Length: 227
Image 1 (cartoon, rainbow, N blue to C red):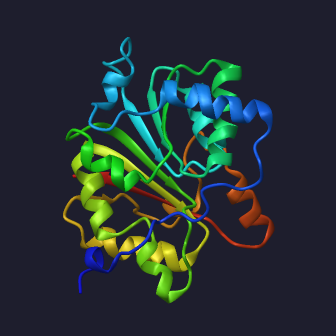
Image 2: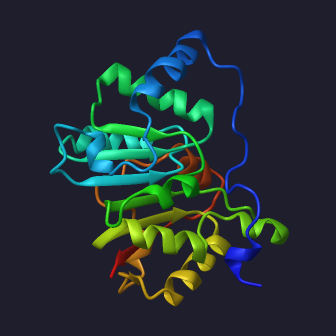
Image 3: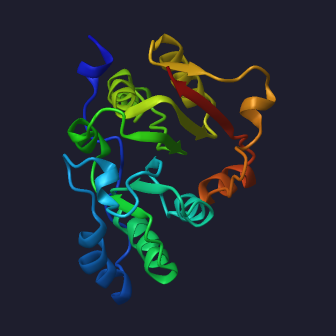
């Protein structure tokens, strides 16, 4: 049975944690609909005055620390962030409103429902940072990185676009490399160990990474290019 056929269930876990504060709830009900991605729309069209700029996608942004940092540092880039966890979305929305980050749009559901609706060659860069590793063998079919998802990503990424994947789980790193090296659509850029041991240039870190380091796990930073 193929990996695509085996896959069952969403790649994410909880949709909601503790009760949102009043201000967060207001953002989810008012700001989120205003900046939510419309399935079927070209990502560049979501930024009417910025269509000629690059568009970067982050899948599973957690609390939004990395996405917000990138949006601040690259005001000339359009960003789309996907995160089904409501509490994480609320945190990012607060930053978007407070800092007036007009270069961010969001998707609050399963990214694998969104990707098939988007035009070819939509993105100049894709981030997948510290996704849920689903460590138990029976859970692994729920991992985000699968041959099916890689095929979807390859279609919506421009030739030469980068896919950056970071994790502190060795088994998941090996899982990703095995699938990437089998793919005709991606090339691993590493030529020496430091290429996956050192964080990306301008890397702001994430709270998941900080926790992993505190607990003695060593992150890996993989970069692949769409060929």
